[in-house]
Length: 265
Image (cartoon, rainbow, N blue to C red; front, side, top):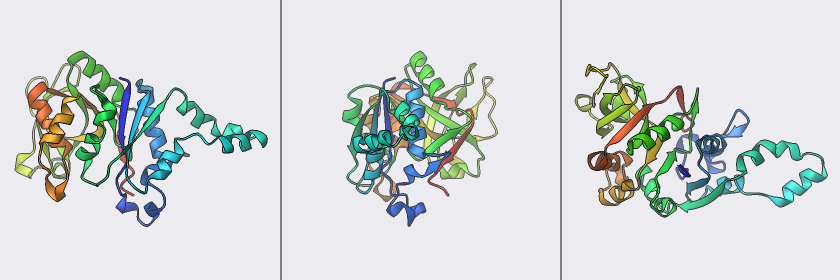
């Protein structure tokens, strides 16, 4: 898997007034911006081409991932080049493509903006404001994609009372602990929450929500262009994924640890 697409165009309204000046994706966690961790996660599964979806006002993200020869020369002259060693190690072997999202029309629209970047290839999609604690699901997702040929989504168990806030899915768990999906719904009514079943066909207690990591086949782009916008004029990625499910099938992998969404304080 050579390409990673990272949506990072959101306004970050929950972080105002800070996000007027600092994109939420650059808020530091353990000494490095959230997006630094996300790019490192993509690189760890073999992604070397990184497409980052930006909007007006997010130029600082591009600055962070661009080499500053004057800064490096100054650091060399003052014996401080070592402070950039982890950044330089991350950047080695990576190429970046900057993708504009002219209007804020939802996650689905942000992914659609990356169609030319994907150029007919499958892509890993990592939400730029979310990091994984306790391990990344991307490695198993890529392996499951290569084995099955299906698009993949990371999922996490949530109580059925909370499932109405998320995109959720239903399906059957296989012998490897992964899921073969049969239904997807964005923010369902409580009586519409899809059900997950175990290998014996018994219903699982929790619902399963999407968890910020995807491996998507090129079919998703045609689906994104075809579906009508939903609530607030936003293009829902879940709706496009449901189309892909019907056409090709879709798998899911449970995250091994915890999803940390920096969009929430």
